[in-house]
Amino acid sequence: MNSKNRPTDPRRRRFLTRSLLAASAVLLTGCDRLSRSDTMGRLFDASSALTQKAQRLLASRESLAREYSPEDIAPTFRANGTTDPQDATYRRLAADGFRDWRLTVDGLVERPQRFSLDELRSMPSRTQITRHDCVEGWSCIGQWTGVVLGDLLAQVGVRDEARFVVFHCADRYRGGDAYYESLDMIEAYHPQTLMAYGLNGGNLPVANGAPIRLRAERQLGYKMAKYVMRIELVESFAHLGRGRGGYWEDRGYEWWAGI
Amino acid sequence: MRIFDSFTGTNRDQAATVIQRHGAFTRLWHWVNAACLLVLLMSGLQIFNAHPALYWGKDSSFANPALSIRAATGDDGEWRGITQVGPYRFDTTGVLGVSGPDEARERRAFPAWATLPGPRWLSAGRGWHFLAAWVFVPMLLAYLAYLVLSGQLRRRLLPRRQEWRTLGQSFYDHLRLRFPRGEQARHYNLLQKLAYLLVLFVVMPLVVLTGLTMSPTMDAAWPWLLDLFGGRQSARTIHFLCALALVIFFLIHIVLVLVSGVANNLRSMITGRYRLPPGLPASEEVLSDEQQK
Image (cartoon, rainbow over all chains, first blue to last red; front, side, top):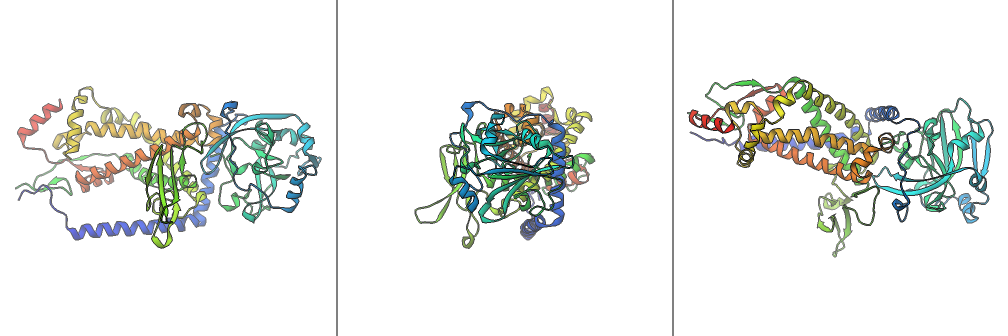
């Protein structure tokens, strides 16, 4: 007998194949259940905290997001999430060109204030052509004009206890909870962080967050709250929404949106 | 009577030479890495499904993606899965674009069995992806450092100058599924060396760097990443291609592990011990040894 390839027992082979299939099925449903478990949730949060620490170590406070040239601007800036808020107050304000709209800045500040759109427009502005990265994976380049958030915060005087800037919005995504987002003071004071009222040289369209939206250029799109009505300085965001610091964060996305 | 056992890769009546093939760290790295890559691949496909199109350049030219997977209604009113690569369209119903059992057809780019988690769930996919990356990247850096510093890179992986002459022969031998035996099996052959070098020092670092390029904070920290890959969307496409390359490597790896003595190979990656496949009759051995030199 000189068989080079000793045939393996077909029963053994069948058993192996079936075991493998069964094991992978158990593994897959197991993974879905695991994804829902508190343990994995804590591990995901821990890994995100590690990412935040590492990225903060690598990126300095001032390191800038890339700015592009006018030729790079996308023909239409893609609008995502809510594109036409149904809130009655918002619709009334929009119908009137946001003449009666006021941006409230309050919370842990020395001088709470309300700003009209004209007041914001008369403040020193910054224009930047930057890339918007959606958590879904796509990117779009647009030109943003607005007030540097740091300048706005300087006007109201941020108190020492303040650790986060919360953005309260007029939109309810798919009719659910009100949209909100939060940044820590490092991202809030970043020179490219704007409350933008202009897109590609014109007024910010409703689809993209009129009258003002947040631009936080080192973060993913879901951080950049649209239809901002109120900016609140807080020590903690635990009392807001489900306590994770934002609309999408409350739905499982990580608070650190730098990756 | 000589019986070659393809399962153990040994000659059962011959006192075989057993060598210590893989060190402890290599074995640990191999299995941790295998688990990481599986999680990274499947969670990566989950993330891809959130926007199942690839582009080349700085941003997304939504009208003409380099690759897209979508669902469209066919003439019969049924959903069809359409995969488009450049100008070429393929009907991929059942796997890409439209998949799942008949009673619960789903419109999704990659099917549920290929993604982690199974259902459409981007945030959990991202959770798994970055968690696995935090194991994969430090382990990769440690392993590459170990290969260089221990001299294993030079001893085991870098082809010797005279070895290049065996390229054609090595390729031909692989096609015929003929593998080095006896003393020659102590070392990796040329194609093996090239494959491991390519995966370890090119594809894996590339998959990490293109992954980092998709992070807006990393682009602010290391703007050269954007220049290196020609923009964030190019980097995303290269990231996908690297994953594809790793899948192809994995498939070839599995086939070769299976056909060249699966038990012997597996044992060498668990305990480290590897039984050299018995050599050819003396005359042939000398001849082939000479070819090697």
